[in-house]
Length: 225
Ligand SMILES: [Mg+2]
Image (cartoon, rainbow, N blue to C red; front, side, top):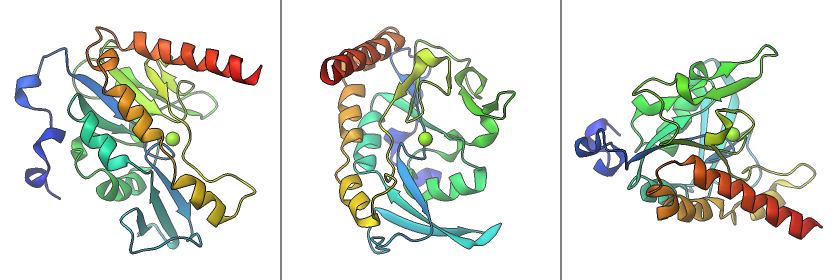
């Protein structure tokens, strides 16, 4: 899909430029929006729009089989009303862009930030420094990253919102995992939360993010105790 054919609501409308009400929502890719198998799992049906298989020129022997997290399209459509959407993935550029052309064609490619935009610590562990991305200077009040590895790999951690990991569980069959994963509703839940005034109209996104973690901590304490 080229730039012209993209639904206009995924592209930042000119009238929003400089409007502090509109925030930037960065999205992790792997295990947040999609799970990508190396090799074809038993349940994989090439005819479904939730599945996409591809090979890369630099390793043609490997078949990648991507399984879209349920609700991705609805999630993107809803969030695009309030946020400028970007992708921030530690995935290698060729792999990530091949996958994103199928998964998020409505987010302009100029807003797909792949591995080269991630930082690395002394031990080679990659992390995502939101202040180092291109574009307008980073504003911690208006920028957040939704990531299954947040807040640990996000700098500053206060701007990382954690979503449960979308991935098969070890020790279960492909079919068992498929049954569980196809019922995953996290993107609906997070879409509801992110499109409420608490997030969309707040003066600083770090406040509802902090409250989210406090809520989760309380919930865990009460339900595990
Ligand atoms: Mg991830």
